[in-house]
Image (tube, rainbow, N blue to C red; front, side, top):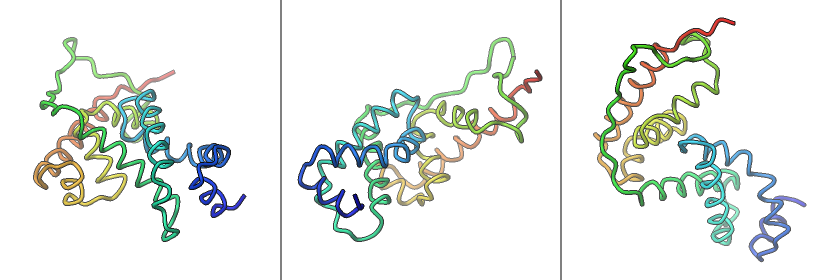
Length: 179
C-alpha cells in the first residue's frame, strides 16, 4: 500500500491502515519520545498519546510537505503539551555523592556510549531536558522554545546553559570501566 493510500484509509478510520501506520512509523517516533521522556515507560505512554493524536487529526494533513515530518511535529507537540499541563517544577539542585564517588559510566568523556549519553540526558531535570532536546537535537530557536513552553527566551537560554553544565559535569565525573 502506498503512503497516499495509507493516509486515505486512515482518514476513513480503517483499523488495518492505522495498524500499518503504527508499524511503519512507531520506531522513528519512539526515538523522539525517548529524547523527551524520563524513561522508557514514559516514552511508551508518550508514543501512545502521539498516535492517538495522529489518528484524531490525520484529516488535517493536506499532502503538503513530508508526512513523516508532520508525524514528528505531532509527536513533539504532544509531549510538550503533556509537559505544559504538569504543575510547575521547582529548580532542582545537583547534590554531590556523600562518598565523593562519581557515577559509574562506560568510558571517558570521549568514549561514552550513546546509551550512556541518552541516560544522562534523560536524567536531567525536566525543564532542562526538554529545552536541551529542542535546541540541540531538534534545532529549535530560543524564541520557538519559549513560545512552545510558555516561558521567556532568557529562561530558555538559562535552562540550556544549566543542562549543558550538568551534562558536562556528568561526563567529566564518569569513571572509566576497565574490564
